[in-house]
Image (tube, rainbow, N blue to C red):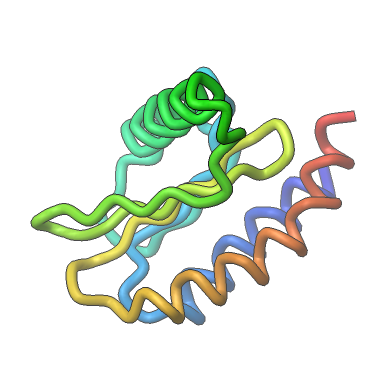
Length: 125
């Protein structure tokens, strides 16, 4: 249980440190919420379902085109953006407000992915 608390704390820290991030969620490939954090209105189950669907479709497309699995997915919408990353057997999704500095989101997310990798492996054992 200590590892899941560390994961949730790392998600909280990411949201606090990254301007414009509404929330962050870790999802299973079938769209179930594994862990999340948000300090604003945020539906983690909806975001989990969306990011899992997008990731699985992108993975299927990449494999069909013999290009491999996605490394990152960015979806820019009228009311914000979604950034999606593989995290071992899980998927990380970041929801942002419109107009955020994409570079900061990506830089902080990549840093967090490295830190979360070993933590999620420990919990999934």
